[in-house]
Length: 213
Image (cartoon, rainbow, N blue to C red):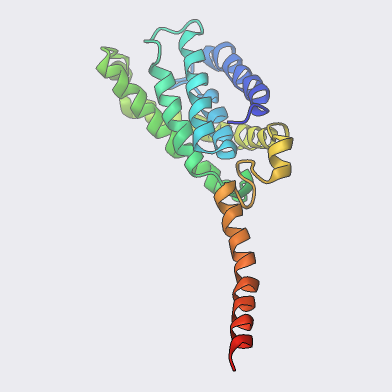
């Protein structure tokens, strides 16, 4: 992930964590708690790609594990958000610009279901049986509902901020920034080869004809 993206990522993650702990965690809604931090990770992953999404998810999850009133094993939520960030980054649209709202909502829906199930599975491995008392089906359904209701307000805003303030000007000028056209050294090498192969081939052919009697 580009160093220019670290400040804007830190601000968005800290803001999401603050809202998660101080606002959504105190609503006492039935079932699951609205996961604003998951939406921030998904939004940034769909701009930064799988590597950036994985790093953002791990950092955000680790902060949530350490922030009070956390009552679960440290690293549990970091693992979940790390995997969700990587998976969402694989579905990054061209240039990090989401043209279809339905596609973004579908990604959020899959992430909400998968993160809830994975969180419960990891909890079962470490002896946390809270999901059994509430009911796993109820947790999945309410998590899906709450996250889909918040997604149209959170994910587009996060993606917009990530694109606008998380761009590396040096990498963008050289065409080597993630999400830009003609990414990487390999793409530039192939373009150069394709552009130069035609004239060289024609020149060799013309020289060959000139040597014929």
